[in-house]
Image (cartoon, rainbow, N blue to C red; front, top):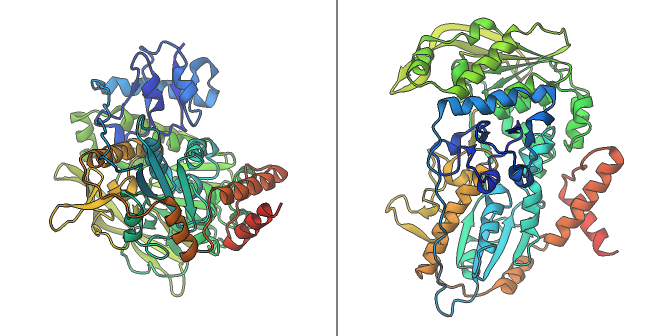
Length: 562
């Protein structure tokens, strides 16, 4: 028997650490880890010890004889990775030896954010043996979780299981939670440094990139980022509205988020009613007229950004036909030549999965998702609102070793009532800190925020996650990104490069209470969490999310008066 990693893999590599025979790859020390679709188990090396199953935070690993029929293909996916990759030599990460500066007291670190990168960083700090650490976690939202709560699609409840570990971190004795507090509005970066040795920003990449084409400002054209926030119950998106009265929608971009958006648009409320989707979104989608979603990719199928597991899952959604033109999954010359030079089994599996979808006879469902390639948006068409999208046929060519798409001059219009752009996430500037406008990140060197003019580190200031490296990787990738930043922070602390804070935790709590009377803490979050779960149980759902601050404050007040 061998064990198999399936679709919900979060890449946090907990399994790598416990595997006694080094059969799970790529490891965080190997070059392909940060861009890997998932992790893979070598069937020829696995000894069926089950250690990986016990530590997997999202229950993605199962014995091969327990696989459901629909998941048998993961046997092939796991095995195929090892056909084209030579696993790198594994080495142990050695933590730096920390010698606290004399008379420094506990190391106090402010972590801005409560999502995966922030929580991994906080956990790494408080679990350091022999080091006295106090962590303050600050989030501008009234509820913690970041990407786990507001980014993962509601019908991916297995992936949301990674949030259990985050919640343990928020509740640790040496961690203090300040929610509904915004850095730059209620407290400044200087305030954080006055009360902490260091500040670590892990605030993600909340913005969506624009297409930069005419008509993008028309009603009915929006960022997929905003749509995701809306259906996930993000407080900032609680009052968003999307016109779902048209028969067809177009999603520009073909990453995993684009597939999530397409699936949510046509999956049907029977599929979504048992999830933690926003109640407002569930109601709106129950009345939606959208029956077809076209997903556009500028380049060919070999360059598609979605992962093979997400593509295969798309084809399993009940009541939805997935349409792929067989002509569009034929390899272009540039891609074929590249794959001949550098065979990539992951890309080949993706192409195989696309061909299987192209050959599948449509079942005649009244809802469908159409995957199109070699199509670039030129203009959003309409007078007052979206009436269609003009697209240019493209062809691929090699430019500087990279395959790019060039317009051929042939254009056509796709009639639609909704256009959602899913062409990447972008970080936002942090008040008082330098910002790399081109990349949308905090400029940094190994997690140390730097002044781009001089290259010198900004004293006591660090970053992790998407605001550090850009929107790449998946949930678990942030664990190792945060670990690297924490190592840099601890090296600086041990070397005496961090100024001791002028005040401590109680003084900071007083400052927050004075500047932000509506700030919430751990007890408030627990009350909100319990309320949402109770409401979910009565509705047959994991939880019913509160999205309005006033409603949250009412729940907290009621709980505190009991």
